[in-house]
Length: 379
Image (cartoon, rainbow, N blue to C red; front, side, top):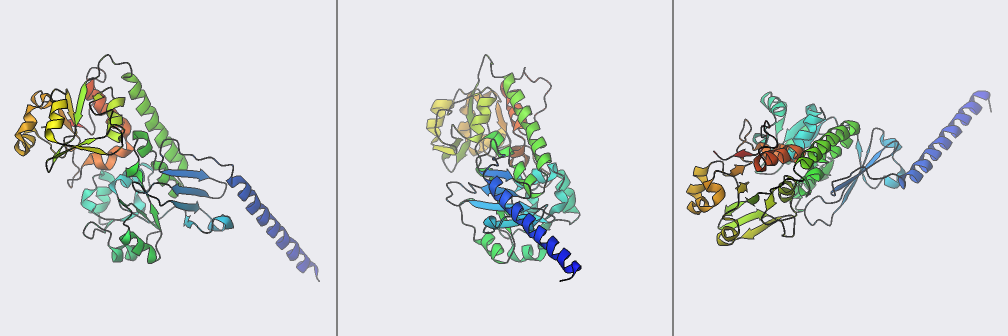
């Protein structure tokens, strides 16, 4: 055995020993790393030396399905014990996203150039992304409210960030069967203002921008809590009505819902705040009128943007005090360049601005120079 062979044998042995130690240390550390997510309940994120584990616990309402993804800049560093989970090379270079709520995180993290396709480009309002759409840099993937399989395969993205309303995911499963990687995002299922906004960390992990995502989210948390403190001891809490009729049924936010939490934090007295649940209540017109005819404010009357539209749809709307006093406010007034509603796209990422809008409405003397961003008076 010559000296060169002995040296090679020695270094190979060291390499194997170091690799084994790395694997063993990583396995030991896995049990000691805490979840980084504070407010959101729909996903967990744990960072290790050479990889991260992203778990989506609630991809759609009442889901029994959970997903685990392992993210790394070097897939060879992932422990064998995690090989059964989908492994994703980060940072992502080419992505398809499927909800407008995903757009603000891409722009905030400065990774908008990675977006190569989206189903329903006209729904996107963000000005940065609209310029890329106008320059034909983002492919339309809409296929009758679904994602077109052939077009997605042609794009060959590193990742498709999908979502589902009820677990019926045939189209996404077909894309997965074609060999493309899909990660489910459940931001829309989240029930608290800061919980929805924290999903920017989901994107931060996929783009290896964890620090940037944390900084952006911490800024929103501080802004939200500072605004909330301003009205915590407000002497008056105006009464608030919400929702509108759809096919003779009035849908209102339940007392533990996202919007009910905003009204409470903004110093308002939502008249259905005692109801249980995070979805919507279905009531008849008379029931709502009996309880809310004298409510001081009416927030979010469906898709109506003017008093004329409301009265034309149902003359009885005009019998509410909030209507008579021109205290009806809508998040459907503000539209993007192609007609998309700005609130649906950007509001989940900016709960601090929603809160300030409502404080400005309920307590106009508290933020006298504030200009509402999402919620405006009906025309």
